[in-house]
Amino acid sequence: MPRLVMKFGGTSVATVERIRNVARHVRREVEAGYDVAVVVSAMAGKTNELVAWCKEAAPFYDPKEYDVVVASGEQVTSGLLAMVLQNDGLPARSWQGWQIPIHTSDQHGSARIAAIDGSAILDAFRERREVAVVAGFQGVNPETGRVATLGRGGSDTSAVALAAALGAERCDIYTDVDGVYTTDPRIVTKARRLDRVAFEEMLEMASLGAKVLQVRSVELAMLYRVPTYVRSSFDDPADPKPGTLICDEEDIVEQSVVTGIAFSKDEAQITLRRVADKPGVAAAIFGPLADQNVNVDMIIQVVSDDQASTDITFTVPAADYERSRAILEENRDRIGLHEIQGATDVVKVSAIGVGMRSHAGVASRAFRALAEKGINIRAITTSEIKFSILIDAAYTELAVRTLHSLYGLDKA
Ligand code: ADP
Ligand code: ASP
Ligand code: MG
Image (tube, rainbow, N blue to C red; front, side):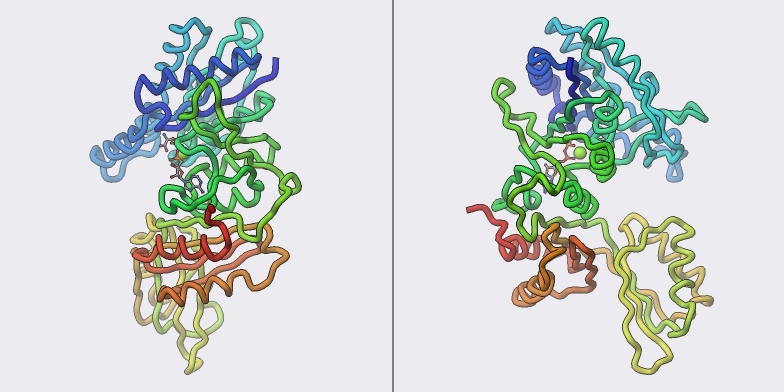
């Protein structure tokens, strides 16, 4: 029998009634002749609630215990879906990450999958055609035996990794939108659904803020060549639409220069004023930040007038903002700076498209269009298939809409 992995996100399993709807989608695929593994997320809002409880329990909580708490949301939905399927007459059982097992690294809270042993699930397919209902987002570290979670949105990664491990024909990611759009359809009503997106583009879109897929899931889909579809669980289970296929660039016939616009509010800006303009200063700033695992993104150094001092602006993840400022304060004398300034009300807006490789001047058109709207650009970065700008958060929607129209992405 061919195998299939289906993944259902939080909104799709938000109530027992919706879990019944998920069971209808599963039944359709079983009846079509697939052996099915279903990966489920926690009910919508559950993981946020669990995270808040951890913070309330202890300000500096043990990350291993955090994982014990937050992994519980997926345990509930996996058991509930298995019950509903059984009640409908389909053989099914739930699997927690440690039972399969899904082995992970020991970075609690953002662990990576190291290996999956699919043999027990495959035995159950062969012997009983039993649907495997797998708790997403979680695994176990084999050295310590402790439960570990894969970072927010990690059930997508559970699903793609499982599809690779089971040799599934494809991985279907069911969510609350019917595919990948040119930008977040909740922000821009003119966003268009894409039939296909190249792996590289999806990777950039996810990294740059499109939360529809976890970045790591796209990496795995690309690495193991898992045909992955993003589709809607709210489609009629009897007549579902295919959604968006994430695939090789060569498999896309009509390629536009820009495929999508993404934005991320998880950014903060730090500016160091009057930094000594001498060799080794960049190392003195960014070395200590890297040592503390702060991921610095955009960097701008202004050419100084006086040859003695300069200003340096860069961005860090918003969650690391306070910590980064503290690290810089500690190293103030070594760096030799006058003042540390910062802003958290900023957003990074990015345009992505493999077509940028062969087209010049794509970004400069954006700078002009944004200037015409009175939007000030604080920082810019570019790479082969994307460019990003940092702007005031208040202009997010205006900037995203402006770029979306500029590159001809608005739906007719
Ligand atoms: P799930 O709970 O199913 O994992 P998520 O909330 O993680 O769902 O991801 C789906 C959401 O991603 C959509 O509701 C949509 O608002 C958002 N999103 C952001 N960018 C995009 C995009 N380019 N295409 C589709 N959805 C997007
Ligand atoms: N429940 C987890 C989260 O909210 C994992 C997921 O939904 O993918 O981040
Ligand atoms: Mg998600």
